Length: 507
Image (tube, rainbow, N blue to C red; front, side):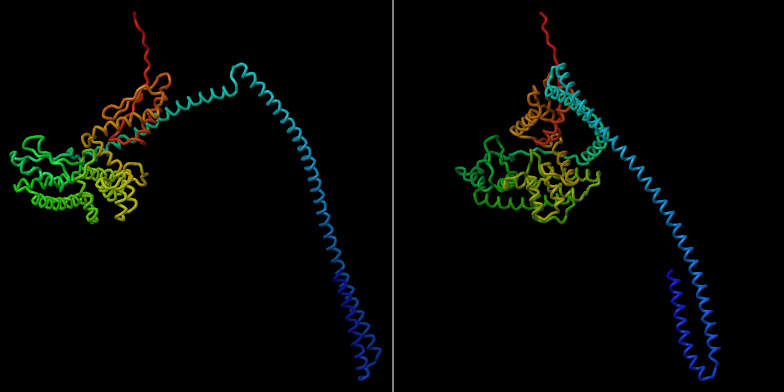
């Protein structure tokens, strides 16, 4: 329709233009003397032609627009039918959903009623069960918990047995191979250290010169060296007694010089003691160099060198610290190489792990803590420090190297003949192991015996209280408690014995 209007407007505009042109034509005709009649006819023909063309164009446009309108109506009708069909489908679904919603409400109501009936039935059954069993709810619950606990103990015992079998099957062969190989490589002789050193003399006259007039020589010697001189216990022997091996060694060297020189008086004693200290100082440096070379540490600090050199004159449970340290270095080296640990770090940690024992008479602290403090003083790596101070497991080992040091130290100390306890220490260790078992077992234990110098613990339990499965669990817990609370060389084998005896008397 817009196109038709546009055509009509165009025709009107054209006619107007023609009229204007005709006016100019009349003027021109008047000038040229052309008849006006001819001009009008020509104009009429032109206008008629233009109107005819316009009508044809308008007719064609009208026909096309009508066709387009018909097509639009057809498409609109189709869309309307589709919408009507969709509306019918939605109405149908809505009716179905309304029906299902009603069914669900009915079903929910039935479920609530059923649940209520089940709860009532459960209460009735509970009441009937209490009457039949003669037990209240709490009593039944307690009985059930006891049964479950017994089952769990049995399961725990089975799991422990299975775990032990698996561990033994996998680890025993490899562990034995590594440990035996390391111990065979470092077989070391042990010399039990004592608190006295004896010096042989040719005759009793030497003893008299050592004592001096009114005992002045012996008093001067004891004052300068800090050791006790014993001259009356056995003939032809002078004994030097001291709990400090370094002092005892200085006194031994000084006494040998005095006896060899023959001139014994306070001045000579002072000179010999001074020379003996110088000699021992050089010996300490040599010992430190020996240990440093053993550990592969040639550039060790001089202060540490002198400190570790004093290990020769310190003992632990009667064992020379220097010998013990050399053995720990060798064992640790083998173990580290076998498991792929840092061998260089392990050897350095083994060298310094017991250096704190040299200073225990000055610092009131566990020796391995002192060892860690010494390592930090010389700015050693924290990984090395942890391996040094964690070898008694009261400090958490952070690396495999720290565990290697712990194992090497334990192997060295546990070797038969390597160490010896004093009587008091032995009694304390045995009683501590027995008490650790009593803490776990309590009233369930009848007797506890530590035998084989504390390497085996036998625990006799009450058979009416402890089952076979509980005995296995108890042995495991006792062993763990001993590991946590006691200090001991080697291993402690825990045997829990459950024995039932039937006794009758024939008359």
